[in-house]
Amino acid sequence: MELTGMYEQLGISEKVLKFARETEAALKERFEEIDGVAEYNQLKVIKAMQEARVSDIHFAGTTGYGYNDLGRDTLEEVYARAFHGEDALVRPQLISGTHALTVALSGNLRPGDEILSPVGKPYDTLEEVIGIRDSVGSLKEFGITYSQVDLLPDGSFDFEGIRKAINERTKLVEIQRSKGYATRPTLSVARIGELISFIKSIKPDVICMVDNCYGEFVETLEPTDVGADMIVGSLIKNPGGGLAPIGGYIVGRKDCIERAAYRLTAPGLGKEVGASLGVSQSLYQGLFLAPTVVAGALKGAVFAANLYEKLGFGVVPNGSESRHDIIQAITFGTPEGVIRFCEGIQAAAPVDSFVTPEPWAMPGYDSDVIMAAGAFIQGASIELSADAPIKPPYAVYFQGGLTWYHAKLGILMSLQKLCDAGIVNL
Image (spheres, rainbow, N blue to C red):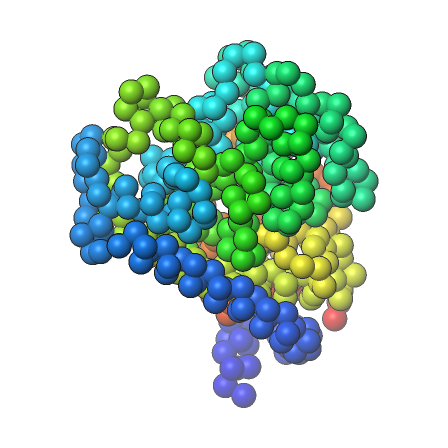
């Protein structure tokens, strides 16, 4: 068969291909469900663009201060409409998800305020932002304190613990939707809504902010549909659709967005400045493509979960669970398993396939981290990628794939590398 021959030319053995095809054949209904969500979200994005009267004039870039940048302002209107918020901040000057979260936090917190995380420890790069790990310029240095309530052993919310943690100084609740470098379940939008309702019943004026990274367009609803005051994310993840070269977004309540904008630029300037520098078309078109790109990444995640679960490895989510982000955690239990997996993802890339990923002391993390990403946009985790901290339980976090077929190849190549190393025997 011609397709089999093509896979063989790429280094995939007949054994690996046969095992993978048996796994894929059982996923037809799951894939149809994913396509249904993508269709809904595609229509949602088109509707937002039509309501904002997007035109090709909005693709023109500006320089300097960026006063009266019509494309920038209209893009923010599109994001506000698509994610059902009052306002949005969508800028190339937001250089990452961590930066967008930092701007949202520091813009809406003041000395003496307290942040509460009711879902356990936040993602590693936020630890120094908050001051969990001391760092120059952290919120802790500005007199902002932090409180944390862990999830219960079964992954449910510790409602009694949360009730006790909320006090007169609790100004903002930070809810991380995705699992980060943990093996807890990702939070569904419905569960986030339940948590927000509980928190607001105790303290109605608290700001509920959701770290939405990796979750956009995975479901038909977003956290802003269930009471979140702000949702925050990166454009080189889901909503950029693989075309956004840089950027982040904050969507939500108008007053929250205004305060964040004053922190991003300067008091008195806010959203009025910030040139789009010629990237507007990529940001618009990336958002347009995002629902179908996310669908491809989700299919890859579901496929990987089912394939590695059949081989006896721990996977979160498991092969049959509903999906609430694009990340698939696979626990190998050894550094070698993690490294071989990442080598396979890198070898399947269209860019830098000849590079061998190695663990290194990456800024912002407390252990060596290995990252595999042969991407068109550096660090774009909506593109096929995998990364892992080299520490117990030695779990790798796989995500992305601009197309399902590329995600599939990456998973096959990861299994091939594990077979070649004798870690897996088919």
